Image 1 (cartoon, rainbow, N blue to C red):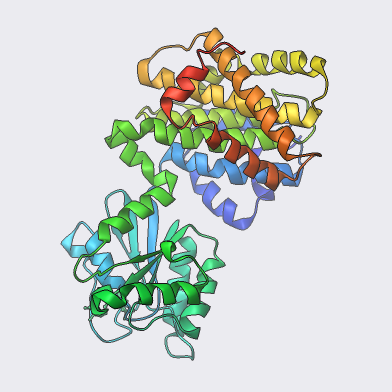
Image 2 (cartoon, rainbow, N blue to C red):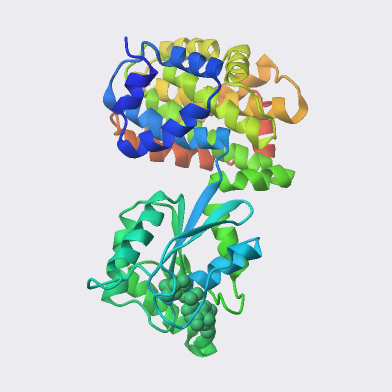
Length: 417
Ligand SMILES: Nc1nc2c(ncn2[C@@H]2O[C@H](COP(=O)(O)OP(=O)(O)OP(=O)(O)O)[C@@H](O)[C@H]2O)c(=O)[nH]1
Ligand SMILES: [Mg+2]
């Protein structure tokens, strides 16, 4: 039987790199509990891998590592100037000068809800600046988020484009800023942005024009970083309660989609171990959003209390008797909706300390399962790939409108017609 260490070994290096330190920070008894969860998990590489990749995000939310945002781009575009806008301590200040190549090494500083990294210019073409480029790419590789900066006057030429593609290849969430927009005359601004977008092959709405020097649109950059990266919303949600359901819903959508995809693999039905592991991590994340630090054991108890597994099995039996619904579709829809119900129950629990009634849970699960079955039936004539199912589930969940709290409250009350 595989144990957790065996499973860790199977993962891609990058994932291991992130997971290992997290694993080390787990208290001993929680490690044991988690190991237990993974015992007997079939060593199907794809399944384990997918589960891990997807739950990674949740793990990070649950444990709350501070995110790192790297500012990268060619030399002299104004990276250090922007970095200086984000830092909190004067001692972290970076040197700014009109001479290209001023910054030689990466520099990390605290920017409040995230860590910000200033990097050297990464546009070396010959041997000059090669070391700096390597340094910058390393920072980008290790960062969780990239602010890719170009210069409004220099524009996007071959070197910039090449760098852009290199950065894209890292597959990091990112945003693109066009700095020194103050140097472009007002009426030329649109043309300059349009041209940059064309050269990069992206929509112009994807580019934020800024002036790091004058402080223009810096708050837009901040908001964009936070919105593009749900994990950064956590400190915000803790500070501003009105964001809590919003963020909780995002966590629920991610987790429920994972559940739906896991259930696509023919498995010993709805209460299969990875599903529970996934729901437990979801509950941990939701707890954290509400400022509770609960143990893994407590999260597991909560998941067990709500009896979601049983609910799923009953529903599966009822609906499969009706016929006309393929097994994969039904099991995926049920795994998804039970996970949503679990997430909702957890949210109510952490908000009010109230236990959601079994009736409300049933109602929500039934209503949502029906909705999902209809949607999936309309979309797929045969069993889809994991990727397309993932997308479809995510879209369908968003379309339910339950990101709006009233909508999900209502679905938990309404009778199934
Ligand atoms: N007009 C204008 N100048 C800017 C702006 N941002 C930065 N600069 C100037 O551009 C020059 C380079 O700025 P830095 O912040 O050092 O640029 P960098 O990207 O860190 O440069 P390297 O470290 O050499 O890669 C300095 O003279 C800044 O004052 C801006 O928004 N508008
Ligand atoms: Mg610099």
